[in-house]
Image 1 (tube, rainbow, N blue to C red):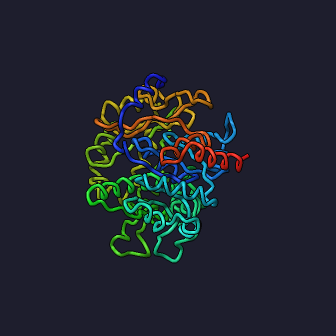
Image 2 (cartoon, rainbow, N blue to C red; image 1 turned 90 degrees about the vertical axis):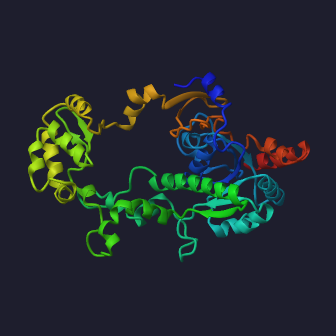
Length: 409
């Protein structure tokens, strides 16, 4: 676990986005994940919250009001300012912040943003160099451009719930908000690309990451399959994914994951499980024919692996350099030896919430590493500070902050 001293030392590093300012009006999951990534990489993320705050402040257990675990997990490295954008003086305060910013992110439908006075053209008028980004549910040029969309809806429409069907054929949602999380990562990377474009040309732009189309591409990278050749009626779907034997394999005392993807790995794997003779079978002799009979081959593996313990197979696979791994439960992850050795889970002291556990930044930069600089903010914690940075006198900043406080009470 990382100590406070280590966290303080790390906070002195400059990430690759150091010096950039992000105005973040997003709530829920997708937008906050994207902006936390930007914040982890050094950006100054200003979280604009309505008087009631991001609704995730009340989602899950908490030690104090409006500081739930769901909020804490995806809102570090941000500063919180409360502005009631229906009040003219608060909207003007936001626009003054926008004038000093590099990126503007929201999670509203376009019509709602325009109605509030923060549509792309309205924001661009105050800062032509701004990178304005959002993630609508659907293609902004299509007939569903302003329809509401959330993770479960997009999992269904993108085909993900269908490919996740159980043996009974009933579609199932993945037990994770995969649409929100994946689109959040795409949004963060797309913003970074737009910033690079601006660095080269001086030109800001509107970046949109439609959830459905983004998840469709994600799902169809492998599952378009023969559809790439023009087939609409059959051959859609990567057959290996649908084998009933494609699952963690039962061993004598548990489960193990093992996979071979090329001829060299298949030779090693079949040798380890005592089935090397199958390589001489015309059905399994090379990758093309092997894929046509993959369900049968997976069945052979399932039968062989059940006769020895997990530890036995792990030792054999390590010796043979065969890709494999454990089957961890969520609870197992918190005490996994590898994750403990690499320091993936890190404890730190939050000023109001006490000792918390966070996950490490997974991406490594040799010259400009991401850092933990700020704990997840209390609602409106930085309101007066941020207003003073854009030229408000202390009395005026205090008045706006007081208006926000009285609205929430």
